[in-house]
Amino acid sequence: MASCACEINACVLCEGRLYTGLSQEQVCQIRERLIREMYEPHEVLFREGDEAAFLFSLRSGQIKLTSSMPDGRQQILRIAVAGQLLGIETFKGQRYPFTAETLTDVIACKISHNDLRQVIEMNPAVSLRVIESLSQQLDQAESLIRDLGLKTSLEKVSGFLLSLIPQRGKPEAELPLRLSRREIAEMLGLTEETVSRIMADFARRKIIESGKGFIRILDRNWLGEAAGIGPDTTGVKPRIVSVNS
Image (cartoon, rainbow, N blue to C red; front, side):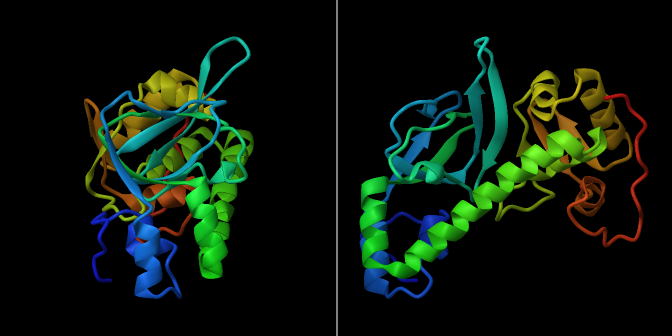
């Protein structure tokens, strides 16, 4: 794709996720509406209850999505990684259902809902991409509910580790892990002891490598099989870890 005047490159929106079937001129018209922003750790993109104004496309880094509990505590819903969209749930002018806070340095592209609405009206092909993205968001929400209610502790931790891999990232690359064991446990509905035990077992068996603030996935196939979300092409079946949830 030829570059456009906006000179924003390499994000989900700019790489063509919404552009199938559009001419170069139409693509440039969309890209010129995009705003690229950079954030440092612990900055807030938007807060739960704020009037929703933008759709965000995460280009790099990690964002923690949280929701307020009745007693004032913050519940971590999930970690957003590069390649994912935020704010598409509120496209009809509602309020953001969660707070988005950066865990690492983050680069994100954003487009206002008003601009996106105009783009959709002018380019019906884009609306199909938006619908697909919304469907993926719903699938993620349903998967989270299923994980909390039905999956074992091993499956939950395995799935969480796999969710840290960016959509266009290399699984063996070093991934930021800025959550404590306690925060991971609260997000997954487990005890801190259970999460620590499983993570230690994974490290001992060379399934992952971890250090202060990072993790590296050494055997993605094993984790996929353990999480119940994909076949293990290595031919070695995971041994279930005996832990108490």
